[in-house]
Amino acid sequence: MANKYWNLGNSSGTKGGNLNVMIADMTSKADEMLDNLIEQKDYQDRTGNLVSSYAYAIFYKGEIVATKRSRNVATSSNKGKNASSEIDKVIKNKLATADKDRLVLVVFAAMFYGGILESGIRTKRKYMVIKDIIRDDVYSLTRKYKGNLEEYG
Image (cartoon, rainbow, N blue to C red; front, side):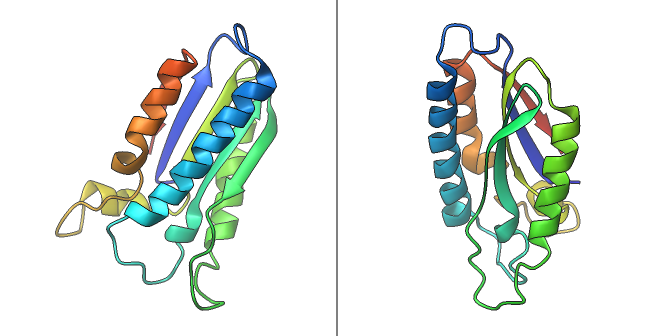
């Protein structure tokens, strides 16, 4: 299972806002978050899998309306090869459970060991993988759209 989900759901659907404008705004902000995750991570990338497993998906009424994966920053064709299948699993799981009445943005690191690095369990220190990097952006979107914030992982 994924390291972290940030699940920002607008509980009132699109009341008070234009759906296309909201999706465009969330997409733009999520694109920035993906860039920030790669630029601000403080762990050493060895396999390319974790850094290539950052992604987001936006769901509305149980359908995917936008999705993007982090750019593969691996230098070798073998690096990052497991990230794609892990991203697919997270999106499939979230699609199956997505709230049918809300606009939902999910930002995540798909590789399970991201949580281990971030928590400091079995490592000498805690690393910045996702939570501390995008927290402010997620909270800002939550307030802007009067959504509900859920954190998983």
